[in-house]
Length: 550
Image (cartoon, rainbow, N blue to C red):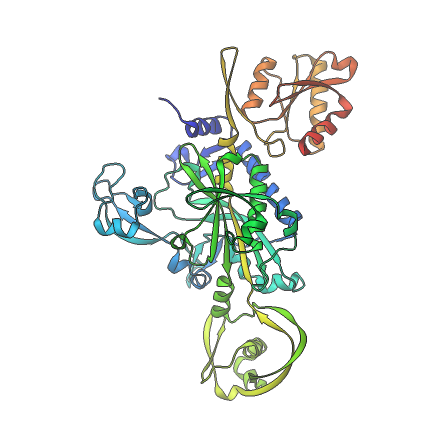
């Protein structure tokens, strides 16, 4: 059977310890994959490069929140009602399918469902029973009196629910960028694209909180001449970030900035620029929370263009939703040029009434009441421990109050770059995969950029000689103390050892021979050029580190 590149990569990935099917000895489960020793390291390297962009270059802050999320949080965010796919069933195969995946090219889903022309991809029987299915995994918290919850479909909500704390941590300054890397879960109806569509996956998300009146970025001047690869569903365009904003192709500076950051990152970790583009979402594609969204799409020889990063302007959707659900103060403030005297209706809590009613919670109730806009008519209802509580009329007054205001409150907007780490990892494998023939022998190699390769250097004694082995092991240990990932190998011919390292993407191989015992030098071989260079033993670490930065 002729293998395409996807089959070749997954065969190599399994054999060499990159990717395994989860629970394979029990028959496996679609949509779940494990990372082997090299895959786990490659994933970690990708995540560390992402952190360098967002933590160090963009000065974001990082948090970590639970993967189990209470029902109320995802109800407020809209995921309970909106995070659905239309599903159809095959009466013959007894399988369910995502309706969108069965669509003929350029067809409109609603029209095709009305005509009942969708067919099962396996048996060609017309499918039936179109219905919405929520894609979240449900669970419960606690024993006995259980609380409904879900495995999170995104890391973002953990950031949004902490905004009021993070805003203060950031000394109440915007923009305020917050990142999180972790697992997400989506109970995909029919995952059929291997590692590209998983039910448990790795996400890296940033939520950049900005002033809606100034959707700019303080570092925009650095990237304004950077050319973005854009696709408008018809033509590919190369526009500078500056021109893309001026022409209205991209809505604002902040969005364009994070598109540039994304393109820089992906092309820097091994994505082929000829197989990369940003595609703008049409209005009917936008998620329930998005005002504008661009997908960084990568090209696969088997699957075509696949979204790997979504960069969305989520406006104030999420913070507004959580403010309404909990009455928590999640506002930011901007100063006036000159202070203003403002007369407005305010709720004046009466602590002598609230104290006996709410006891230890009276102080919290007072804060919530003071932050509320008074209703035109009673009752006043607040959220307390997730429940609606009506405040008695005798517990407060509503008065016209004159206040000196030095600024105004507003709900920040959010720019969200959301990265699918597993998809990016697969595409690095595919875009770096190469087949060559040397002396009638067939070789496969992965041309990873040196700084993300799971093994940086192979260390080989040329022969199984005790003195060579001792020196090689000493060099190997020295490199590892300098955090250079190595693989020590003394088995087989030197050509076979080089081939094994090429196949897993190792950029450098260090060979210790008998001359090394007298001239104190080793041979360093470059994977991509196959050129060999004699380097003093005391300079090996410096030489490798220099090449990692180039």
